[in-house]
Length: 455
Image 1: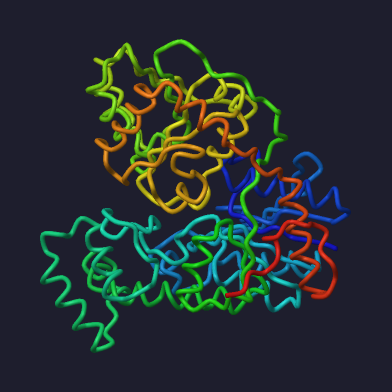
Image 2: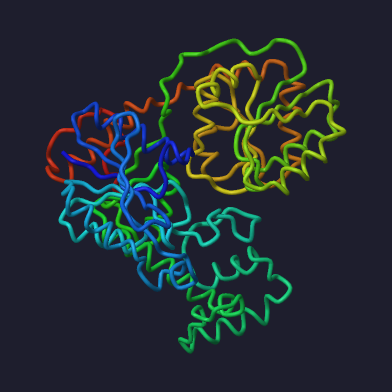
């Protein structure tokens, strides 16, 4: 079995969750005898390039396209599509597995269609919710959890709020609705006004793209039950979906150290220093708690220097808050084990946050916002505590519970289940791959959720 993994960036040039996930999956497939290679764009270059990472061949196809409005909006194919096509023809894989679609001069629906033409089986893994949500956070007007159903009117209203156009909401909605009814799409206009007036068309395109992705894939893999349900609500057949839950890419260290016994309560945050990760909520929650009772250590790199600077300044007067910089991947679990609890105050619905699995591997509970991705992994008062989305006061209340109820951390720790290994994830992917060629072949894995779930 030969498998080509399509991704927009890869190790060691870019290190993030999707890249680590793909690397780990390939190593599992290689261990099972599959021939694997990575195919990704060689941005800004007119020639292909090949390099190797730990026994994995990486082919970078020539992609000299300059990103512009028409390319970003998917109105034309990127120049590198021909080079991509030639690599697939030369490699002749049995399976082409997409880890992401990004549009622009990266992998897009155009590449998915080319993969389909080769006759290979086509698979995609959804790591993010952006395939069905224009804002990508599945939060209606950044206030409440959305049901995920794509609807031109509802989603346009949410998108208007997201873009900061609330003051002109009524005239903007009136004009954009009228233009939509007249089938007059202004999205080709090279300015913000054209985009703003075309919101309903952009939402319609989002829905059409989702259906087109499903039509051009033999299997869509999702990491969570909640996103499975959202895709089904949007008309994707349950028979085309497979749930393969998140696993720990690194070998579980077996680390189950006892947490520090002394006060203060030690909280750790690990993640991007960006608004969507909710550091501001955590700092605000701690502001009125006696600093002798709780400490916070923040680990991570920033994607928003202005945001990071603002909250570093805001926490200068808080001696119990320390900014620790970035952690090496191998140090994550041992570092987490030195704290009482991990906090994940996300302000959007991440698909399946890996840091929760890392906390469980270290044997500590998690405080998290009750967004979809968090709530599916963190069971309130069992493996952690959930607080109301975007509510610093409720987060403060949950932290105070851990301070005022000395036995609670121990009770939560006792109910933590060790995370799934990536070996199990690999077995379930192999079952999916084999089912594309021989649906009646018995699965390699005995896990109950690795095969297609029907409703």
